[in-house]
Image (tube, rainbow, N blue to C red):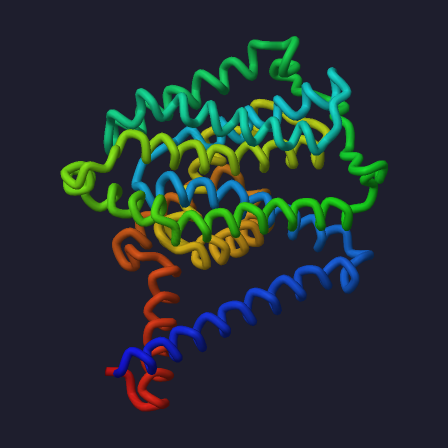
Length: 335
């Protein structure tokens, strides 16, 4: 294939991706107008958007740079409690509280990464798990800031440019915007030099370090980006639920997100989104079976790690590669 032909194929593939994204966004924008009276359906979409935002952060930290962090849900809780205090006690508007929660969560993640980035594998998991447990205990003990085990109540609903949120559709558009922001930033990170370096570090940090690249700094940056997404999601969750408690940010939620990441594929953005959709819908049906749903998550992780280690995203990547090969060969069989 000539260079010109390869360029033409790449241009067609890019146009296909752009059209697919435009159609997907248009369909999502139409959902509240089609299901406006179905609060339950819109609520499921809100949960999906929240899950996508948190999992994009997991993808940056664990999926791309292979840093096995168990602190993501704890940082999600930090963002939620910070937004609750800023809006309920200090009277700060929702948008400044959202921004502050994301930035503070990112900084907390970076601080965790400073000692944590010196470890790999199970040792890093232990360090971040210890941090998550400390945060969970503090959530139960710092009653003036968190409400203790009774939780933080009466969190104000968002008000943006004078518009007070009331209907479920209002939250739908808010969380859609947050999820799209997290998705686009993750996509940009994945295809940026930072993302390529993060993937290389995850594969072999010694080789990357031998090229003169500061591995430690890039690991901290990955933690900052991933934790920032968790902070945004936490602030949104607090305003949506109007009540939060330490139970909302425990180990069970971490296991759920890890399951989604393994099933979706550790390096696949589309796979992660599909996994969030599937598990949000399935967990909604399995809530009455708790804690058997957690056992099911563990079984699913074991099955996928052994039978489909690249997850759903790996299968999608293979299908996309075969399809592009057929297009480049003029519709013939893929080589």
